[in-house]
Amino acid sequence: MRGHEWRIPAASVAAQFHTKCARISEPVGHCHNGAVLPKSHLPTPALLLDLDLFETNLARMMARVQASGKQLRPHFKAHKCVEIARRQLAAGACGICAATVPEAELLAAAGIGGLLLTSPLADPPKMARAVATGAMVVVDHRQQVDWYSQVAVDAGRTVGVLVDLDVGDHRTGARSTAQALEIAQAIDVASGLELRGLQGYSVLGSHAGGFAQRQQVSQAAFAGVAETRAALAQAGLAAPIVTGGSTGTWEIDLALPEVTEIQAGSFVLMDLAYAREGLDFAHALTVMATVISANHEAFVTLDAGFKAFSTDRGYGPEPVGRTGFKYRWGGDEFGYLDRPAEAAALNLGERVEFIPPHCDPTVNLYDRIYACRGDVVEATWPVMQRWSAAG
Ligand SMILES: Cc1ncc(COP(=O)(O)O)c(C=O)c1O
Image (cartoon, rainbow, N blue to C red):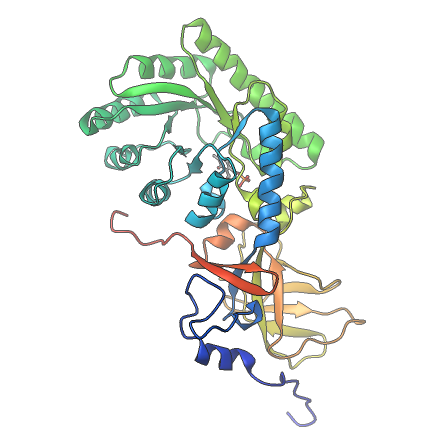
C-alpha cells in the first residue's frame, strides 16, 4: 500500500444525501425534505431512463406511424414498466403487446387496454388467465383453438384471436398457408372466439444486419403473410389485423401495404445491439455504476457485472461519453473499465453510465427505473415484479 495515492471524492455526498432522504423510491425527484435528488446520488448499479431522449424516441416513432396510416402496438417485454406503457398510449399507441400472461395481467390490472399476447400458450389454466385480461391472443395449432374456445365459453367472453405464422424463425407459428387456413377456419366456427388477423413476427428480420439485409428478410416475411391473408380471404375469412415487426424493421414495415400495425418495443429505450445495426434511436436507457476500487493505473473496478447488464450478446456495455474507455466483465457484481493512455484516471466513487448491450434482459435485472430529466431524478417507476401469487 505504501506510496499509493488515494483519490477519494471531496466528501461522501451520496451517503449524506441518503441519510437525509430515506424515502428514495418516492415517485418524484424531490425528497420529502424538499431536496432535489441528483442522479449522481443514487445507489448503484441503477437503471436510468433519460426522459428527454425517451420522449424524443417515442415522438419520432409516433409521427412516422401516424404518417403511414398504420398503428403502433409497442411491445411491453422491452421495458416491463406500466408507466412507460401509459405514456406510449397517451402518445397514440393503439394498445400494448405482452409476451407473457403475467405481463398481460399487470397491464390489465393497471387499466391498460388494447392488449395482444404475442406468445402462443399450451396450458388451459394459463389460457384462462390470458382470457381474463381481455387481451387478444395468438395460436399456431388447431388444438389451441379448442382450448381457447373452452376457456372463453367458461368465462362468458369473446376472445380476439390471431393466427401466428412462422415467417422464417422456426420458433412459433403455423408452418404453411394450408395450416394457417385450417386454424383460421377452426377459429371462425369456434364458440367464444373471433378471428382478428395474422401475426408474422421475425426475429431474423430484427437482427439480420444492415438496413438492406433487414429489409430483405422482413419483406419476404410479410410477403408470406400477405399470401396467407389472400388465401383466407378467398375462403371468406377476413384478417383485418396484420401485425409484427420490431425496432429493427420499423421503417421497412411501415412501408409495406400488407402491414396494419407494428410491435416495435426496444426503440423507446434503445440498446447497443440495435445501434450496431445502424438504428439511430437515442440511447435513453443506461446503467449507472460506481468506481469501487481504483488501485491500478490502467483500469478501475466498478460495481456492475453479470448481474447489472445483459450477457446474451457476446459483448459488454459501452460507457457514455468516455471515448476510448473499454468495459470488461469482472464477475457477478464487478466490471473493469480500462482507460486509454491519454485519458485521466477515474476516481474512487466516480459514477459512470453505460449503454447496455440488450435492453430487455437488462431491464429484467432491476426492480425500478429512475426516470431522469438531465441530472435530476424526476420519478421512480417500478419494473414488473417477478413474483406473483399466480405464477
Ligand atoms: C413477438 C415480438 N414482437 C415484437 C418484438 C419487439 O421487438 P423489439 O423490442 O426488438 O422492437 C419482439 C421482441 O423480441 C417480439 O418477440
